[in-house]
Amino acid sequence: MKVAVVGATGMVGEVMLKVLAERNFPVTELIPVASERSIGKKLNYKGKDYTVVGLETAVSMKPDIALFSAGGDTSLEWAPKFAEAGTTVVDNSSAWRMDPTKKLVVPEINASALTKEDKIIANPNCSTIQLVMALNPLHKKYKMKRVVVSTYQSVSGTGVKAVRQLENEIAGVEGEMAYPYPIGRNALPHCDVFLDNGYTKEEMKLAREPQKIMDDRTFSVSATAVRIPTAGGHSESVNVEFENDFDLAEVRQLLSETPGVVVQDNTATNSYPMPIFAHEKDEVFVGRIRRDETQPNSLNMWIVADNLRKGAATNTVQIAEYLVENKLI
Ligand SMILES: NC(=O)c1ccc[n+]([C@@H]2O[C@H](COP(=O)([O-])OP(=O)(O)OC[C@H]3O[C@@H](n4cnc5c(N)ncnc54)[C@H](OP(=O)(O)O)[C@@H]3O)[C@@H](O)[C@H]2O)c1
Image (tube, rainbow, N blue to C red; front, side, top):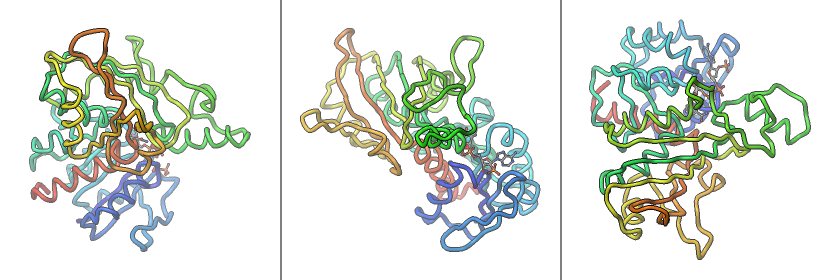
């Protein structure tokens, strides 16, 4: 496979190269792609140096697959050009996610919807992926009515500039700001831009994407997204109301039998998910599973995952693996 990684010098791109190598994706030729600023830079992949090229050059090299994580504008402009050249694009930005002609895929849930005709495939938002990984098995069994989610999101979800802002603040150094306020010792109820309805774009991604991935519009999701000064992963406090009642032991059993989900839930041993445990792992960790005692058929839980791994790079590479295994590229 001739594989282009678009945004190879960024936070997600760097992890993408790591995940491709770890999972032994059948790369015969790697094409690292970034902005004009990075053309000519060397990136190491499996012990070999590769030179970063620009988008124009990458399209002309006709890769079999292009894994995009270079922002929405780059995807909107360039993904169709790659697709026209015969390349299958898996895109991490929000550019194509809600386009009805594009599939939005979490492989454990809906990879079977993919066909050879899908030339631009969307990877969901990082906070959506970890949420649906835990919700999907429970929805199948108990049928969800409403989900209320509050996120505690890592600065790594914003990109290199935000991680640098936090590092500068810790070191007491003045530098470029990714956020309108300091992030150290703070919590910003502001992820992505504000929309006319008073929600942020991140909150609306959490509200809309699960319905598309799970191909079901009978449940609703209400979200508040908050940025906090962690680096290892996103956390989510989730309240779910089901049509049907459940048994807590059965919920834990169902989640622990779900591929890609790990239950960490023992209050007697202080066992619960945290970003420091999830960091650099591919699994989605679920804990603090308890009945919401204020209304029937309702559950509270706490979900944590590494936003750069399952929330971005790993999910993208899993989609690519599915395409290869099923001869869709
Ligand atoms: N961070 C996460 O947890 C996460 C999760 C899911 C999805 N995403 C999405 O993934 C994308 C990248 O996020 P990130 O966190 O990796 O950001 P980042 O660290 O800022 O990296 C951005 C990457 O895109 C490249 N780029 C920027 N403008 C470009 C252009 N005009 N042409 C070609 N390449 C360009 C940059 O190249 P230079 O180094 O040359 O500037 C860099 O490689 C975004 O769309 C984001 O929404 C991020």
